[in-house]
Length: 215
Image (cartoon, rainbow, N blue to C red; front, side, top):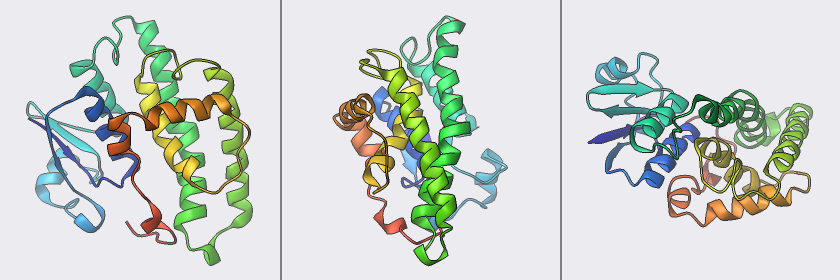
């Protein structure tokens, strides 16, 4: 039995639960972190010494870090669609995964969403938030050029790249922020919202996080 640890509202946990849903994996989900606590429990720390979610437990192996988990699940349960045999094909997917984590996520999740939504409005650095919104607009424009008329980011099939990038789109399109005209990205987002696994794992209201920095 696959076990997934982490609170459903956690962004990186949503990536994992979305892929689990796409793969149709029987699993057990245990809420950890935030109001659920448990991150400092000795048993959990043995699985992840950093005390962070998500973590999965499968066949006796505890695996942490969301993108490592995505790669593991893709390789174990989703080959070849989610884990192509050819290294060059995997690299095409993984470079977007890495870009999503090292470029898009710091600017959107840590910048726009955290500082422009979770931080109470009277404490927000408005100039810093505007700068991050502009950076995210550039990222959206880049994605628009790449997607073109494709069904998903890299073609007709959902890949791990879409899992990483697509998780951002729900919060981005639900927030009242300026964005450039990106019809290709919007069309891709519409297709994602039609997927039951995306709706179940990602499309969760985050209104209760507004102006609240604690987890």
